[in-house]
Every structure is written in structure tokens, then in C-alpha cells.
Amino acid sequence: MKKNLIFAGILFVTGISQLSAQEKEEKLIPEVTIAAKAKQQLHKTGKNVQLLSSKDLEKFKGQNAAEILNQVSGYQITGNFNNGPEPKSLKIRGGKLANVLILVDGIPLKDVTGNDYTATDLRLFASENIESIEILNGASSVLYGSNATVSVINIKTKKSTQQALEGRIGARIGSFGTFGQNLSAQGKINQWNYQFSGSNEKSDGISAALGENFDKDGFEKQNANATVGYSTQNFNVNVNAGYQHHYYDFDNGAFDDGKYKGNDTQKFSGLNAQYSYEKGNITFNSRISQNKKELQIPVNSSYETQLNYKGKNFFNEIYNQYSFSDNINFILGISNEVQSLGSDKLPWNFEEVKFNDTKISNTDIYTNFNTKFLENFHLDFGGRLTNNSEFKNHFIYSINPYYLKEFESTYYKIGFSYSTAFIAPTLYQVYGFSSAGTLPNANLKPEKNASQEIDFSFGKKDQSLVINISFYQRKEKDIISWLDLGNWTNKYQNIDENTSKGFEFVIKYKINEIINFGGNFSFNENDNQEMTLRQPKQRINSFVELLPLKGSKINLSYTYTSARKDRYSFPYIYVNNKSFNLFNLNINQKFGKNVEAFVNVSNLFNTSYVDVIGFTTKPRNITLGVDYKF
Image 1 (cartoon, rainbow, N blue to C red):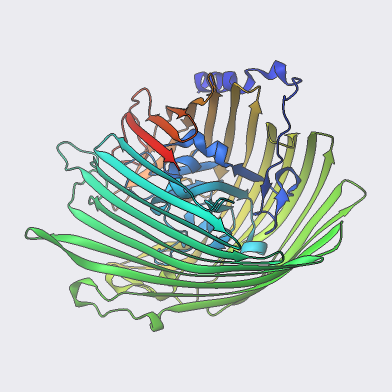
Image 2 (tube, rainbow, N blue to C red; image 1 turned 180 degrees about the horizontal axis):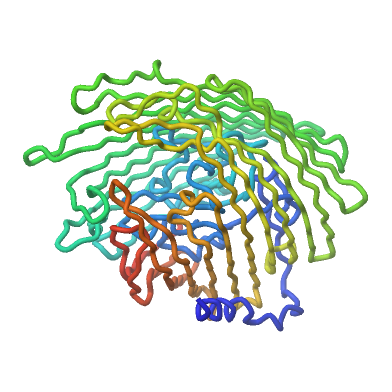
């Protein structure tokens, strides 16, 4: 551990003596929308917000969405280092996947087929279509509702340009027989704009389960997304649609080979419209998403579907942002969401589950105020009332005072936030599923969270220098847990409590036009031991980015993950997974204005380690790619 800290420290402090060096050119101040549902300069947000801009994402060429997020402060994505098709579970600040809400272009995209979560599957995303990623840490249910108890991730897709036609075509090959292609096109014609992207990826993979002479578990993945928009001076509307498909092999479990296949699809369509007036704007968001998951088993020389789950989520929201003055702004909104789950294929002649028989709906009204007083003092506060068809009414609130001092190019900020948040029971938990022996429980209450956090930030407004320190504590009550009832039956009940606490340290510094470095350290501990499974207490991420020649970019990154508790089999066998260190190398080279090539080397030193007990971790692997811009 000491060697790891020394190495990370070297990356952190290199070049600090040059902090007083002046930038040669004026930089733009980055903006985010996630903190207030409106454009806001990043350094002015009251809560902890991290931004992976399009330039930041260049450091991760050849990596998928899960691998990118795994390098964010406080994030641990278990399964990330295993075979590609294996599930990716977010462990953030002591929370689980149910504590996270994922947005796409500001609108929730959910998968309601999950047994204890509704976050959409990160394996389905194509990183080539991502423009930027905004991350809001801390409880944010006031603005975003259920599941936004630990973190909200807003994945922004690539947008149209001012040209009539722009596009990119790319191809890549990699270890384990992996190859992929991607294509995108976008443009603007008069008041109309459009965007299209598509990608395909296939891989022979490696064995998911750890063992000798096990079969490889490959996968294929396709994505397609399209947006058409129309805009005037005060009004714009965008219609979008997407399709994501993942077909993959998987094994029986830890140390156990198998010949199963999963066939997952996600389809969604939506609409976003905004009307601006003198002192504010009105926004309408709508999205319907459908997921289908199939389990296929070998029968003779082919595969047949043994069971499937089908889920549908319909989300609508309208909100008004109004400025009373330069110092007082507020948002008032109402949302409605309907979830349904069904199955028309179950094993052992179980009766099919119809959509109309498993349905949960909720209607929310929320408001949030931002005020500025005494020149540099700010106060964000708000509340949300949820009426759920199962647990009826539930109220939450948030208060966030902070002090922001701005200078010509720098700033410092200190703030405190106290927020309550909640996680609504899933369809699976409420209605049960007979084929899995899960009994229904209509009396489930929402999981309740109360979080407090202190943040201190210092840096430059253009984010060429950022230092951030955060301390947090979150208390959870009525945690919904799986309970074994014996006789091959189980049930979800509100039985657990937990307190998570920890801190994070983040630094980024662009020394000059050639050297850029940064890193983060996170520490977390949980009172409830079950919540510590696969959750490391300490994590370190750091990087050094070099731009030695025009058009060249070299990024060396390092990750340290501390020891974790894990379990496998049933009845459970508990083990301690050892800490591990990983290095990755990414090299980008541009050739003229139109061609860009990259090489990404993961696990640079071919380290042997365990991510999830009983499953194979990837050895050194390489991805080569080239993009042509037209």
C-alpha cells in the first residue's frame, strides 16, 4: 500500500511548482446541466459535480462506458475487469446499483426488469456515441426522484453541428478476437438538425468462469441511435430513438463452466421540447423504453429460449424555470412514470406474467430554489412529493448552503448539503416471480436515505486546475433485502439499516500545453457488513497525459483497488480478495485533419488479480483503432 501511495503521490505532485505559470490562451469555462436541470458553469454548482468532457474522453479511446466510469472518484464497477459480457455493478460511496440513476441527455433511461435495481445496463452503451459524461454525487432525489440517492450519471450523446453534413467512420480490432465498427453522421439544414450513429462489436472473449479448459464466452453488440430536431429563436424540439442489442455467452457461476446464452435488447424513443421566454423557460421531456432479456439453453445442436423478462417504462416530465432576479431562481416541475413487467416464456410450465398484472405508477411534484445573498453566499433548497401506487405518499427535501468566491480566473468554494432521498421498490420485489421462487410483497416501503456532505473546491474556472475535497455520511433505513424462507422460496423485505461514511480527494492540473496530470483518492466504510461485499475501502486513480508532438497524445493511468470481502456458492462461502494495481496506456495520433489512430493497452504489465471470486480477469489486452472524419 505504501508503494502505491508513493507512486500516486508522484503523479499528484509532479509540476506543482509551476502553479503560477500563466496560460497562453483564454480557455472556455465548461458548463453542466445536471446540478440544476439548466446550464450552469461547473465551478458555480452547489453540489459535487464531475465532468468528463469530450477532450477528457479522448484519453479513453478503445474503452467502454464502464471502464471509463471506473476511473471516476468514488466509483468501483465490479465485473469491469472480467469477461466483457459479465454484469457490471456500480459500487459508489458504499451504495449499490439501486442507488444510482442513469440519464441519457438529461432524461432517465431505466431497465425495470432488474430484481433489485432499475439502472440501465452499462454494457449496452457504445462509447463512440458519447459526447460527455456529467456525474452528480450525493443525494439528488429532489430533482430526479427515485434511486438518485448516491449518484446521478448523465450521458450526453453526440450532437449535430452547424454544417450540413459531418460524420465519422471507424474500425477497431483487439485481443480475444474482438473487432468493431462505428459510423456517425450529423448536420444542420436551415432550422432542422439531425444526428445518426450506429456501431457493431463482436468478440470471441475468454471464459467467464475461472477454471481449466473452460469454453470461451463470446458476445456481439449492436447500437443504433437517431435524433431529428427543429429550432427557432425561442423554441426547439427534438425527437429521438435508439436500439441496443447484446447477445452473449455465460457460465453457471463461480468456478463453474456452462453453455448458456443471454439475448438482451433495449429500445427507446422520446421527445424533448423547450420554450424560452423573457425570464425563464418551460421544458417537456418524454421517453418510453422497453427491455427484453432472454435466457437460452442448449437443446441438441441449437439453443432455445427457456425464460424471458419484458419491461416497459414510460416517463413524462414538464418543468418551468423562472428567474425573479439575477439572485433568485426557481424550478417547479411535475413528472409521471409508469412501469410494467411481464413474461411470455417461463420454465416448468409456469403461467405467463402479463403486463397489466404487474404495474407501478407514481406522480411527483417538485420545486427547487437557488438564491444568492451577501454577495458570495448561495443557498439551494427544495422538496419533492411522490405519490406511488404501492407505498402512497413520500416527501423528501434538500438544503445546500455554500460560499463561492470568484476572482478573475480562479475561485474557491466551500459548501454543506443535507438531503433526504429514496429508492422505490422494484416490480420484481413487489410482485415476485414464481419461476425464481420469489414471493410477492405489496407492503414494501421505499428505502430511505439521509445524506450530509461537506465540499471544498479550489481551482481555475476553465478547470485547468482543480482541487476538491469531500466528506460525506449517508444513513439508510428500511433497506430492501432478499430473505431466504427455505423450501426454495424467498421474499424481499424492509429489514436492514446502514451508515456509509467516507471522503474523496481529487486533483487535476494542466501544467502547460504538453503535460497534464491528475488523480483521485477515495475512502469509504459501511457499518452493515453485507454492504461491504466487493466494495473496497480505498481506491486510487491517477494519470499523466503527454502531448509531445502536434496531434499526439499519450496517457498513462494507474488504478489501485484495496482488499474486499466477497462470497460465492450457496450456502455462501466468504473470502477476502486481495488488493491489486493496474496500469493502462493509451496513445492517440492524428494524421492531418481527418484521420485519427489509437492504441489502448489495458493491464499493461499483465498483472494477475481477482475482481470477482471465481471469475476470470482479463490479462494484458490491446485494442487498435482508426477513425476517419468527413
